[in-house]
Each structure stands twice: as C-alpha cells, then as structure tokens.
Length: 75
Length: 163
Image (cartoon, rainbow over all chains, first blue to last red; front, top):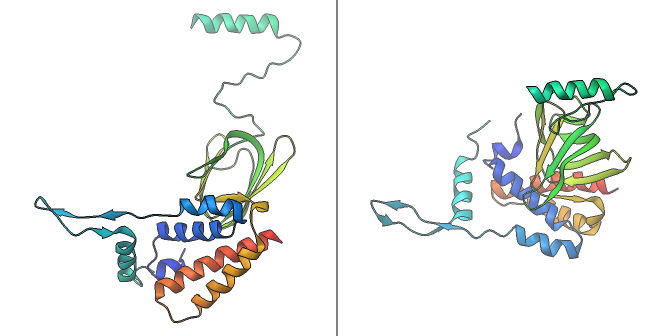
C-alpha cells in the first residue's frame, strides 16, 4: 500500500506519533492535560568515535533532518 | 499417565447425567474471542472473552468473531467496537496500531492512544482541523504539510465518529 506520508519521507514511527499527538489534543481539557505529558520527548544523543564523544544532538531534530533527506525515496 | 487413567475412570462414573465440556485453562470457548487491547501506558482489555470486535483496518472495516483466520491488520485511526459477553457495547477511538488474530481465537490489538468517545471534545477537534488545513494548504516544508495531512486524516475520522 502506498501511503502519502511515506512518499513525503515520514517514517511509520513518526506517523504514529503525529496521530497520537492529534488524538491527545482532541481530548476534553481535564484528560488532555494528563495525556499531553506522554507526548513530551526531549532526547539527546552523541556519537562516539575512537573513544571521543561527538557533538550532543537532539533526537527530534536529527530525525527530522533524516526524514527530509529521505523524502521522495520510497514509492 | 496414571492420574489420567484415574481421571478418565472418575469421569465415566460421575459424568453420566450431563456431558462435561472439558477445557484446559489455555483454550478459549468455541464461540468467544480472547481480546487483549493494550496501549503503551494502559491495558484496556487483558485476555478477556468477548463476542465480537469491529476494527477499522487499512484494508477495510472488519468484524472479528471467534475462529477467525489468523491475520495481521494495520489499523487506520478510527473506532474499535467491542461487543462483550454480558451484552454491552464499548467503543474506543484508537490513534492507530495493529490488530493480530492468532490461532485459537486470540485477538491482540496494540495502539498508541485510545479513548472512549465521551472523552473527546468536538470543539478541540474543530479548532485543530482549521489549523491543520491552514498548514496543509500553506507554504511550509513538505514534512510539515505531510504531517498536517496525517492530522487531517485522523481528525476527520474522529469528527465522523463523534457525530
């Protein structure tokens, strides 16, 4: 099955995350506040090469850059 | 082996009046489905016997009953309806995930987010639809537009379910 989001380079993981984010924001306000906390992700990572730690990058930004680079590659 | 013989003899002696339906713990009743519906943060159904489950799969809406052929279905963001033994109907809007039917009438549904319909606010849905439409028709990056389109797909399904 060809999905529009796949053609734009979005991964299935990211698709699930976007759909979940929308569902959380559509809740009634009392449940929404609890649910929104589940959507927060602030992960950083650094690559190690030859025993030296590389630059500390945010996972969200790195994923976004990768997806933009892969846009249009899968059909 | 010996205990089996004794059990069989006991059955012959005691069970003359009514046929005994012997089932091991692991077997599901022939007309029931064993449902497990789980989110990462919450278990909605845990190995519970139900009568029927209606799911919104990418390949189409389907109703799953006992003895269903084993299959794996990707879910669309949409309603899942569970018809329970006691006759109650429960509906949940799931944001997406997978439904797996395993041999022996075992159904496992995994989703990221799922709530009963009364937990949603139609106004929040409408506001998000107009925002997403602005982004989708705007001049942002391909990524932003694709994400806005995903949001629109989910929101339209949710709006239809809420009616």
